[in-house]
Image 1 (cartoon, rainbow, N blue to C red):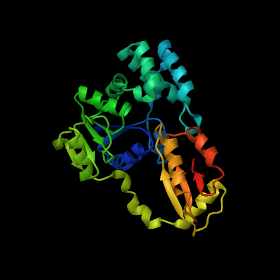
Image 2 (tube, rainbow, N blue to C red):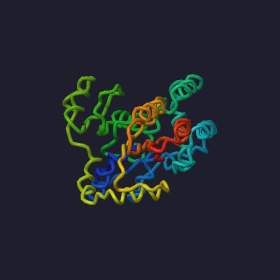
Image 3 (cartoon, rainbow, N blue to C red):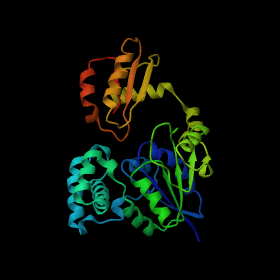
Image 4 (cartoon, rainbow, N blue to C red):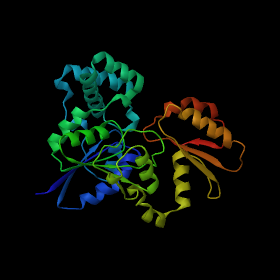
Length: 305
C-alpha cells in the first residue's frame, strides 16, 4: 500500500520552499501526495503543472447560510482578483475559517478578533481536521506559516498522524511555536534560536533550504542581459547592461510603507543606480499607493508590482 503525504502551503516563500520537495516526492511511485495550495500558492503550483486542491474542493459553503454570509462579507473585504485566486476559493477559505473562529469564540468575539487582527485571527483546526480525515495521510508537511498550515499540524497531532514543519527563517523574531514532530531548519543559527525559544532540540534537524536548491542550475544560465531585457519589456523602460541596481524586497506588514519611504530617503543621495522595490507576492499595489505616488517622480525609484 502506498504511503500518503499531505502538503499544506500558502504562497510566496512558503510554496517556493516546499516546491522542490513536492516535485521530488512526485517522482516516487511508492508515495501518493496531495497538495493543499492556499491563497496565491496555486499560481506557482500551476506553473509547475502540479495538481493541487483548495478549500473549495472540500467544502460547499452554499449548504450553510451562516457560512455563506461570512464568506460574502469577508470576500468583499479581502478578495483581490489581481492575485488570480478564484473567488469561489477565497469565499470558501474565508467562510470556513470564520466558521471555526465563531464556533470557538462566539459571534461577537470572533468578529472583534477579525476586525483587530485581520486574517491573523484565523486558526481553522476543525476545517483542517475535516480535510485530513478525507485525505487520510500518513504524514503532514507544512512550513512555519500560521493559520491553516499551523492548523494542519495541530489537527494532525490530535489525530495521531506524523507531522513535519519546514522552517525557512533564522528565527530571531518572536513567532508561534512550531508544534510538529520534526522541525527541519536551514542552519545552526535557526536551530539555536528555536532552542532558545523553548523548542525541543531533539526534534530539530538541519537539512538546508530546499528553495535554494534550484540556484545550482539557475546560476549556470544566469544572464544579466536577459534580466535587463525582461525588465525593459515589463516596465517599458530602457535599462542598459551597465546600469547599477539595488533590489529591496518587501513584506506584507503594516509598517512596510514607512520602511519603503525610509529606504528611498536613505538612498536618494546616491547616483548612477536604480532602486527596484519588489513587493511580497501577497501584497497589493494599493497598499503602497501613497508611497508610490509620493515618490513617482524620482527617476531612481521603480516599483516592480
